Image 1: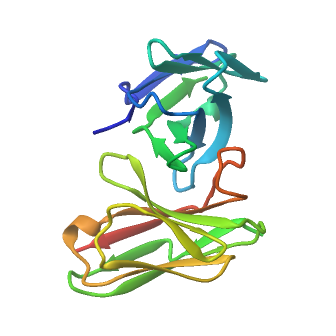
Image 2 (image 1 turned 120 degrees about the horizontal axis):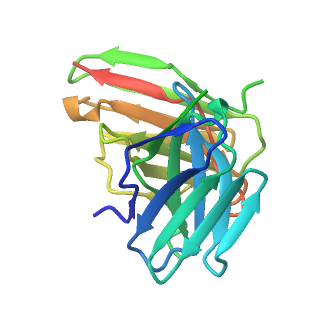
Length: 112
Length: 114
């Protein structure tokens, strides 16, 4: 039972354009959502987060949108850069369970 | 001065063997974790320790035994290795147990059981 799903295993975008990575979840008890970025042979690194009581959080080129009614969130990267090429993991956090639950990741490739 | 370091980076061993993976963090964090990334690339939590005490123990075979000698170290010992144990294991740490402190991950240990 995957509580966090990233249905697109990969995404290819031209440099300078917008990258949109999607994430769906089934657990309505998540209190926060986080995005992590992972380069090959490295561990994931934290990128951006959003509280379940908000619908948008922005940090530079990265914006996360949350649609609670649809149980859907997305990460927008504008403009995309070749250095953004990595695997992006969406994760939900539940205060009661004190656990992060990760999706399976989406590989983003930004072409120069 | 790697923040979260785990050794070894690669581990190839035969079924039935016992092996350990070590993890150390120099961030002064209170909480450490072990995650497993399986063949489908999902990252799943295995264990969490806060100040050397076990706080999360997901459904993991008891062949896996974490050991935290101090709050800067969390080692993972695996007995009687099986083929299905092949995966990448990530150690992580955070300050506190809530979401406010994101996890800092090590670079992973790729375990291959033959």
